[in-house]
Length: 108
Image (cartoon, rainbow, N blue to C red):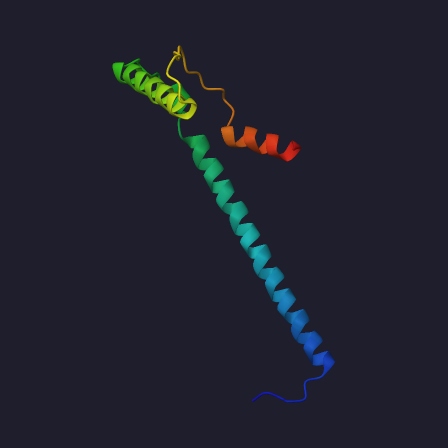
């Protein structure tokens, strides 16, 4: 079944053939990913955007906002051990905390 006396040329031929097979499969996977990305882009163009739909203000967003402010206030009080402060407003910065942390840590 297997030869016991495999030469260096046989080993190199097997290695070359194996590398060719691997690269062919990698190219096939790459083209499949590109095809899927193309299909997803086309399907997104056909769907109406979420921003086009008008949202009516509701009372649930106000209560959620109050709950968020209360949760943030409680977290700050627990972290600092003080409760002599007042959270007046909460605003999104538009930046990810993880991204800011990564930038700070990469500089240090």
